[in-house]
Image (cartoon, rainbow, N blue to C red):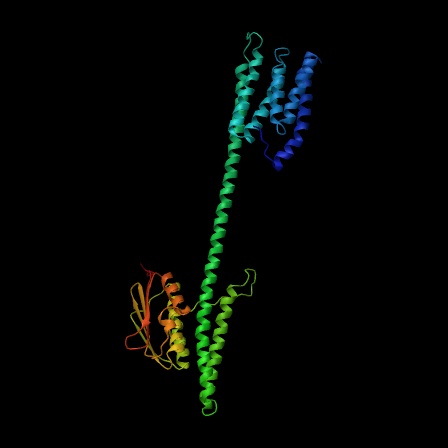
Length: 383
């Protein structure tokens, strides 16, 4: 019933309680008990009262029994009721503050039998029963209130710990999500850049003897594309470094503002690009802007890889709350991997478009070539 609750404060007070009990015994003896003489009953009552103070934290059942023993010696020596009152109130306060409500209530019921002893043996003088019972009740209520306040504090601490753990899990999930996004970014960069480098390297190899000027231009395109790819890869890989690595730097994410350079890269790879922009360009959300750029990059990469020397037609239409992208080519190559959606690039497109709640259509055209059509809705900043 009286299970102990360990704690630093409990241990400190448990060590101080014997000193408090000794001091109380000397005080009670000097002020009250010495007047009735050093009889065995007086000595026993004083020792029982001080024992209750000494053991109120270490062994509450024994402390309650000791205080009740001192109370029940009152019919023999009435002054012992006053001596036992303070230890019993201290025991009740401690038990009510540190034990569950049921144990504390049982202890209070037992303790209230003590004041009844002051009216024994014939109940001819019962004036101390009610005052002593009220004092003990107040001590118990104060301890109970303190105990509930402490319990509420512990519950609140546990609640905050759970909230902190949930937030930590969410943070870890955001890290995983960000790393997956970075992995897709790296795929786009490598696929696009390597396609250009491979095509230009092959072209330069063919013309290096007969057309050295074109070969040098191809090498220049390879160098430019490689430098840009390395720079962007360093930026993305920097995000994956440890949080304490201050050397990691993060550059702005690409968007449609960089479409001109993307078109130029594609044309240097041997694909003619016809770009059409309609509508009034507005302030796009960062996610939509990045998604549009990456879709354009992947679509043009597929043209470079699969459509030979085709012409790519890129149309961008700005509508209120909506961005429409359309990329087609007139290549005659057969590239089933792209057409049936098993290629990683097209899968990445679908994931990006789905993240923006958009729509994607991709497939062969009846007249030949390939088509990528995307609709990306967004909330306008002024809405």
